[in-house]
Image (cartoon, rainbow, N blue to C red; front, top):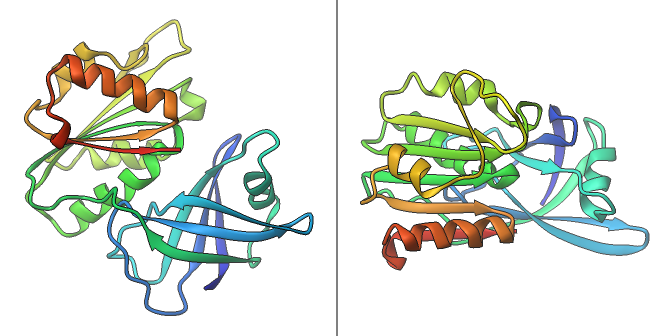
Length: 226
C-alpha cells in the first residue's frame, strides 16, 4: 500500500512522527505494527514500525521513527519531506491491547512508547473501563516524545503517567531520576495488572528481571523488543 506523507512532526532532535494519509480502509489492533519498504542504494530495505495512532482514527496512521546512526531506513525516512510517498505492508503483530483486562501497566523506553500511544488513545477515545499506568524511561527531558499529550491525558482519571529520566542530576516536577526499578513499579502500579514492556532488547530483558523479582507471572507479561 503506497501512502502519502501528509505531515511530519519533529518530536525531538532525532525523532520524527510521520502521518500517512489512508486512501482505503485499513483495519488494525491497538499495538500492531507495519512494515515500511524502500529501495535504498539499489537495495530493498524493510523495517517494522509500530502504529501510534488508534484504530478509531480512519483518515491517517502515524509511525514514530528515531534516526539511528548508519540506519538505512531511519536516515532515509528522516530525509523525506511532506507529500512524499511510503510503501507499507501490514498490519502485523500480537503485542496488542487485551480489552478483557481492567488493569494494565505499560513500561517503555524511547520509541517503545509508540504502540502504547495507540493503546492509550484507543482506550480514551472508546471510554473503556480500563485503568492504565504508563512508566516511561528516557535520557533527558529533551528526548521525551509525546510529552505535552501525555501530560494532557493525565486529566483522565483512569490514566497515570510516570516519567523517569536517567541522565539528569536534579529532579523536575512530575519526574523521577534513574532507571526503572522494582520500587518505581511497586509504588505506581497494581501488581495484579497485565504488564506490557516495549523497547530496546537490553531494556526489555532488564525489566523482565525486575518483574520476576516482583513475582509477576509470565502469563501476565507481554513484550515487544526492537
